[in-house]
Length: 526
Image 1 (cartoon, rainbow, N blue to C red):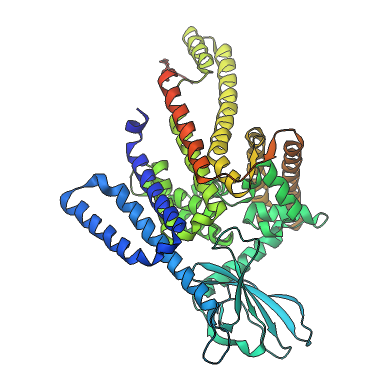
Image 2 (image 1 turned 30 degrees about the vertical axis):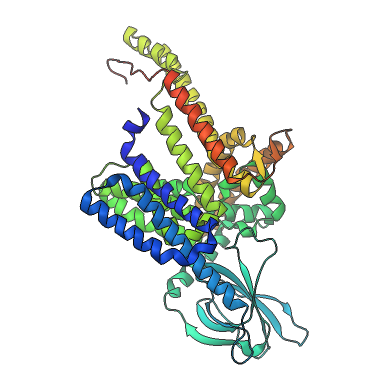
């Protein structure tokens, strides 16, 4: 029944899972990475066979082979970079890399010779790199958006969580770095960076009395978690509430809602409002750093709005699948990104939970039936009383259900990567998510007001900081409660698979025994 009702959306989602599964298999077999052209050719042949002979049953296998080819291609590029890092040039110098400066350049101190040591972020293909440079006082300092030829030794951090974790390139001689020019496409990124810094200053207006709350407010609005104290990040992570500081579905939905509210005052048609909201939503994602979780949320919201723009019916499962195709297809290394995996897993769990529960009767349907009976008897006060408690109860049950679904989806990933299971987060998120919603709305109001009237902006920012402080206290309570959060050994892939299969089997059994939803006929409801 569930498959028949959601067949189109589930088909797209399963295809996306097949792509991710193929990429995971490819990364699990790195020694065979040189075979990626052959697997890609085989996938093309299977696509041709599907089109010519209509072999639609092979589509999942074909997509998995495409994911396998993409992963092996990424692994081949990584292995080539690592092999080159251990070689010397004909002149006896370390290998040279053409790098684009993708962050601000920070001064880390002075060298023993009197020069300065700088650091900045860049990338070698899909491998992030942190570059540490020693320069003379007279030498030019690199700046954001420039391209430099750097010679140095590439090392992997001991605490790296994956083979695609950030590496460090040590450029320890003055002649090992040469400026090549500026990158034109970074003009827009430089503009976004300046705007993000300006909004960050506005978000901190009036919070100079507490630098910690100021950094938390910036993280809540712009995803700047790097500025948050490490102990605070650990507290929210242990309580299972760190997700509210990642720009994801909650933030994108609120920003889209605020945009729709403002655009509705202009008198534009719904189609034109959607067309105007899409670029504004993309701009917000760029301002927040365009992290995978934010890109996923923006893609799903964009597909949702775009469906109405073209007169098509929106499908959250299909939107999830298309977003997964784009994110993991463009960069297979996102398989190793814990935030990306949690974002997609939690969103899929919530969507499936909402679809599944919508087919069954609620424990509170009795109140709705009593309200319908009171309506037919003309007893308005009793009808309002039953309806009031019905909607309140449904909100609580809905919040608990969504939190429970998110916990089921995220537990194996958190247990495998972080070695922690947080049961208390199920109840904590019922309160934390509404507080985060209020905090985001107040923070947006404070950021906008700070550009016009500083006292008004400081007022809203302090109210937002008060909500964040309540979230912090609640997280401390969850960590303090015995058994609410505990460490565990890192789960294997088999353990994660058993977890998901067991829950799927459990819900399949429930589907056969739970009563179906009954629609209560009424005459006219005011």
